[in-house]
Amino acid sequence: MENKSYLVKMNGNGVLGKTVHGSFHHVSVNGSLYPAKTKSRRQRWEVKPSEMANNTLNPIRAIVDGMKLSPNPDKPMIALSIGDPTVFGNLPTDEAVLQAMRDAVDSQKFNGYAPSVGYLKSREAVANFYSCSQAPLEADDVILTSGCSQAIDLAISVLCNPGDNILVPCPGFSLYKTLAVSMGIEVKLYNLLPEKSWEIDLQHLESLIDERTSCLIVTNPSNPCGSVFTKEHLQKIIKVASRHCVPILADEIYGDMVFPGCDCPSMASLSSDVPILSCGGLAKRWLVPGWRMGWILIHDRNDVFGSEIRQGLMKLTQRILGACSIVQGALESILNNTPQSFYNSTIRFLKSNSEICFSELSTVPGLNPVMPSGAMYLMVGIDMDHFPDFKNDVDFTERLVTEQSVFCLPASAFEYPNFFRIVVTVPEEMMVEACARIREFCQRYYRPSSCDSNDLDQ
Image 1 (cartoon, helix red, strand yellow):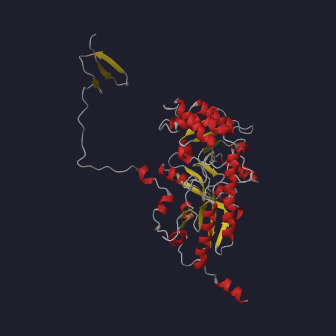
Image 2: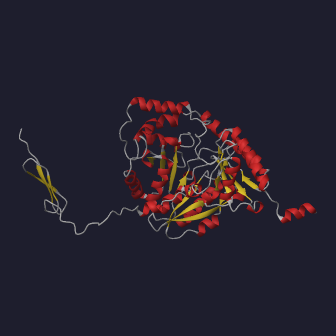
Image 3: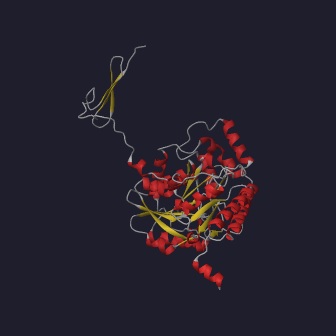
């Protein structure tokens, strides 16, 4: 057989042509066999990080990394700061979830690349699981992602350009700002009201909207607050978005982690005209954050997004084939076979721990906990006037670690000073012990105000 190779030429229109030539492959660029001589060259190495890298900052890491954390060696450390329900081993996922993963691995059907948006069968499973008459879903309305974090990243990326602004809750999940600022997007913080169980200050929210507002982020249930908005409050939020034609990014990763007696409808089920990108995943409800399985649910019944936003999301998924194929293979079984008793057990535990923490800290002078209604968190206000030894919440929580080996996250990490966040997923005995240590710490440093002293004298 004759040994042939091809000379590959590219004309001005970028069209490849081929001719038989000897036994070597040559590539012709711009009509020349060799590239033109470069006009200049660097005289020395000078490699710098990109603007995006320099602009990427996680507020939690920025604060925590600057804290001097030296626990008391006489007391075992109790970390109430990490939003990972698996840390202490007391909240394992269900056996049905593990079996679904074993079956997916054993099948050897999911070892290759999946489509960038996820396997069709897996997307159908998510659509069927979350579809309802008020907000129907099909497989084409679902994009699978590497955790809810990537879902949020894709949603912000497809809706926003540099110079746009997004509306973010305060206090709120720090990732929103981390992603937006790295992309040249302005973050406008709208206030949540602790005295109203962290409802949104709707008047403040609306005052922030302008012609460059491209997205309203609503986190319900809330991280870091553990609050759950009522149906009526959600409807008011949607009306604001509707008046100003602003799409909503609904972070609903904790959507099914709601305490008994509370109702938590999805935002999409209440919207008649506002398009919504709902972000969720397996991490919290199924207690497997390390499996990195998330999704975007596209709710656009009035075709406001049209084909362009969907195509944009698909293009963005092609940058990185994100969602793990093995977990995708297990997804249908996980969604359909996890028993309700598993969900109920998790919720009972979180509610019980929240009640213990709230009850214990409510009687500590100088602290003002806000009882949550869902998720895994509880926020505690610090009356800093009664703790003059401390400059702020960062100083307060740093000293709490030093003296009591209890680490709570200062809410300055959520741009909400003079509060701290407690994660309620620790074992019950740890929660009780942590609260006792916090009480001891506060009793040592609490100082009554002058008016309190006057009241005692009367």
